[in-house]
Amino acid sequence: MACMTIDYSVPQERQLVTAIPGPRSLALTERRRRAVSRGAGNLAPVWMDHGSGGILVDVDGNHIIDLGTGIGVTTIGHANPDVAAAAAEQATKLTHTLFTVTPYENYLRVAEKLSEITPGDFEKRSILLNSGAEAVENAVKIAKKYTGRRAIVALDHAFHGRTNLTMAMTYRPSPERLGFGPFPGEIYSVPLSYPFRDGLDGPEAAEVTIDYIERHIGASEVAAFFAEPVLGDGGIVIPAPGYFARISEWCTENGIVFVADEIQAGIGRTGAWYSIEHHGVVPDLITSAKGIAGGFPLSAVTGRAEIMDAVQPGGIGGTFGGNPVSTAAALATFEVIEREDLLGEARRVEATLRSLMGDWAERFDIVGEVRIIGAMAGVELVVPGTKQPHPTALQTVIDAAIAQGVLVLDAGSWDSVLRLLPSAVMSDELLRDAVSVLEEALGQVASAVR
Image 1 (cartoon, one colour):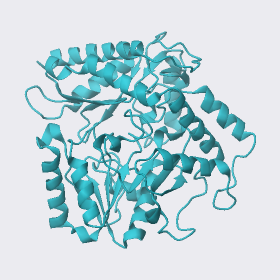
Image 2: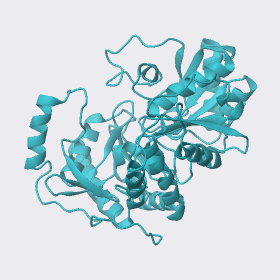
Image 3: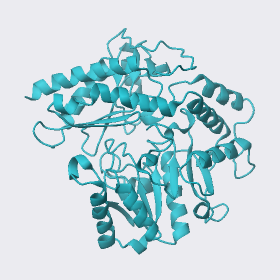
Image 4: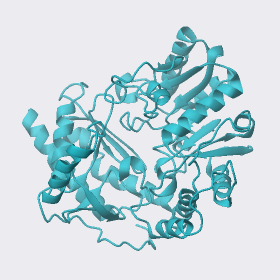
């Protein structure tokens, strides 16, 4: 591991002082039932007090290894001191004016940085927003305005957000879409490359996608093709090499805006600034969020100047988009990523996880496939001897891990993928400890289903 200059306020080790959840967490959960909508569900009823680096400390004093990072938000670790200091300083100077009323330099500096780090050597523009879903919605608006077309294409197993429009672009019905319709029209889910399940190479899978669009929608009707280069909520699905190259080529041939939704996999998580770089493709537009500001709410759409500038002044924006405090945090986050070489550290995390988990599909008959790219990993659980999803096994593993102080996530259209999103600063020692807990849980589940 590279020598880092980050000052951790919490020892970077797992420590259990009570059962998980502990008594204070249980008491807060009871209060929650009387005050918070049950619609805002929790993966684990464990209440957090503070954190640092790769460790969260709950209200009962347990030190928990965080392999979830708020679903990919705290890529640089919890409570990074440089980011906290930058946000605190900004909060004493200016907390809000609204950029579209009276602008401020932080917004401009973030946009300039996004032009620098996003793929492509053409002239770019950005707009800053609050959430990933808001970024996707604005990318839809921009693409429709630029092309004058009506249809939007998204991939099967995709997750693009929880607003009405982005729910229509999200693949699975439950729990995200159940009972919330009707949704906007002209949103289409199309087949993707899912090597574990379709057995196709990238170009073959791309032709299936293209054929579906041409037969069921019509290329001339499509404004934008939205794709997560690594599908996060879909189960850390990594389309086969060559898939996006062919899709991008076809989009260019047909005047379709190719949008890389990098909300979960972008900003260094995969060992590159953006995960589309692993596919050797330059998109027309990119959405950023989650890891962009070290835990503060911020998102962006960045892309070709001629596309971004197609919208009339006042056509896009929002009250809190590009807030001064969030943009200050983002600028500090960019500095931390570069100074600490967190792109390289994400690749180190990948190498460590591969060495620890790479053979799980051979060792455990409930593991169908392990997929790892940077600080992202998906373990697809199946009924032994089949490719049938095994959601009950996943829940058992998650519950066992959390009880031992390792926070992990679920994923996949069938709720059957164990999802790991550690921070890029997590040490090899912490990773080994966490994986040993997961390995023990997998072994117990595998033995029980024989």
